[in-house]
Length: 262
Image (cartoon, rainbow, N blue to C red; front, side):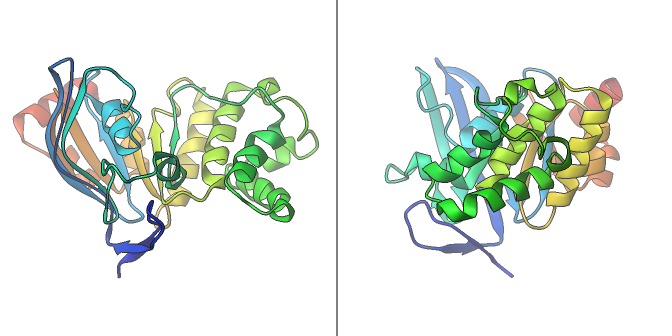
């Protein structure tokens, strides 16, 4: 059944695919970064994008919520769809788009404010009624497994948290806005094994109700948390399928990458 998605123009839309690329290419200063990408991410799926360093994995995420907009010399061709909305339509409100498509980066990005304000402030800016904010803050922190750790010190600086806690706070801040899509750019690569495991468990809980697109260098993470895996090599999508299909692939570029990466 099609899933409802908020429109960045104000009217609801429905689609079975959360994100779709239709012959999308990206070049910077005339240098090709991504070439002719066409794929769909089903609603509620977890897509892990893997591939060698420099293949353009993070560039895919930046295309989805238009983080390339202010970079000089960028040229995007093709169409990126969020529901039935063309992300690069001139009428799109980019701020609204980024509310519905959250993003978490490789390094934790806590605001230099209290733990509470890190989540409450974006909620207030986006119009959440004041009376609902404490409940939403608690729900977001609970969702990422932080509530028990910080409930007694919500007004302490977020910068006093450990690196793993700061990253979970960054994810909680994104999830508090209830995005339809969550983009994760190697969210656990700089963390200790215990923190990585916690984030992997969190991603698994999002399956089925939040669409997740995850960039990772860790093949075992992709195998464990993803419903689908895409293999990006030299800016081209060489394979896309469920994990078992990908890890059994005999397509030469994919097989060679997997052999060297495992």
